[in-house]
Length: 396
Ligand code: RM4
Ligand code: MN
Ligand code: MN
Image (cartoon, rainbow, N blue to C red):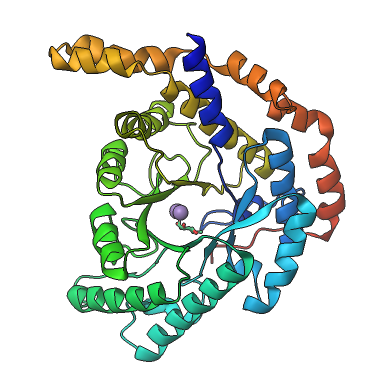
């Protein structure tokens, strides 16, 4: 690699940031229950402390996504306290997610609920969430809807689409001029027959209906089997509608596993599409990289460090693709060499380079190793464990 290429990678790495989710540090599970971890966070102070520690080890995750219902139980009133806890932990608030699924009122939906009172409540909650975001100087209001139905004929799909359009427009009006609305999609779960915003096309139309500050959020776990996510990314980039990511990995459904644990090549291919877009346009894609991962087997904090490091590695590998060579090969229908430009980059071991890069920035060369040596997990377990319930709840 020549020194100009190395400088470009270092410049890109210096700008690469990935956001941590508070809920990824808490005990969560599956519908069959959860295995409680002594060290997992229960309070917002603990979640932010864990996030701050992940940032201290990796240096690239200064912001934390927050869920209003879980992290601001008293709504806007809690914003000042959350801001000071975040500052104490060495992080700042990031995207704000309203919670439009946990309340009993949302059994038949939020924006798509046939009851106008429930729709109004959902909109109010979004407005309050936008106010929290403004108070915290958070840029993004991140919307994920559990809305849908379980049986054919039980929901008027077009009617619900219209309610969504109307309320998304109203939520958009609550934004300040420098804020964004991110619209996430998911094909199923918790609804098992239809989901109101089920895929990227619906999210794109919904975001366009909402207004100019609305973009699409791609959660990598929210697709059908073997869907080509990087193509979705390429199309959204081209439409200037890609607002951000929720990164995680999956085998079957919305598994929320650590990034790249199942399909590392896919993570690389996603970063490659973004890099190619930037290389061709000469601009920077304005994308919020966020993690949305939450599973109950690995220690939460270590799982988060693994994902941050994985994202940084696949991002770096994507920076290594020789676009001149790949474009020339495509020009001559040289399928083998065009593909090889990607495969060579993917096969490069970037870990020694990243270790050096981290050292040059005063960071641990191996974040996970440094975390283990620091003993944070054992201290958290000793402090938090005794206060925790023994069981993780039951399915029935
Ligand atoms: C959903 C979706 C949302 C996340 C919730 C907790 O499946 O991914 O982004 O906030 O889970
Ligand atoms: Mn998500
Ligand atoms: Mn999800």
